[in-house]
Image (cartoon, rainbow, N blue to C red):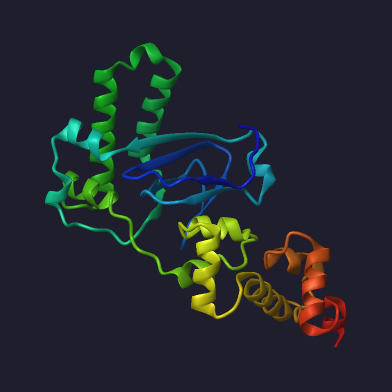
Length: 258
């Protein structure tokens, strides 16, 4: 695709995936992670909601974005390996992980590219072979005790505290609906949970925290006020000025002078 806005990768039960980026650069944001994917950095992900975001460096996406995904499901694993995933208690401490694309993974990507360019070669036997190869590569690169343990861990999402999700994404210019999606809650349930945890409405709490952070950044004369506004997650300078004035009783420029 030539360009995209922030896009939600919806939760799908019992789905895990791996993603290569062949061209361009993509940001990935989850409950407690943010990292970038490009030709040298791939992603391993469990089943949860997360966002793909445009790169903050447009020059890295001049030719658009091209990505390739490998998707895994327990039913597929059982068919390929005859594994009983419940037989392993192995876990890993991540939901999303940035993976260095080494020579072996790069070679694997090239072999998939050949099949995508020549679909007549991609019969069922070839696809099964490539999926098995992928599982073998990843289980070894992640130093899992066995292929069974690697796959079992991949379908066990880690619980992330509600407060951790909010604090990690506080300055990310996410709407309340997008924050609710990261928390796997409806908007109404999210607002209710937020009030319980922070004893304040999400709109007021988030605006106040952004403005307090902005006040700290304004102490540096090297940063433009517009840069400060965007750095703390406001989508426009006018919205930033209005929120800042409502809390500090003066504009950001007046605050800086004082």
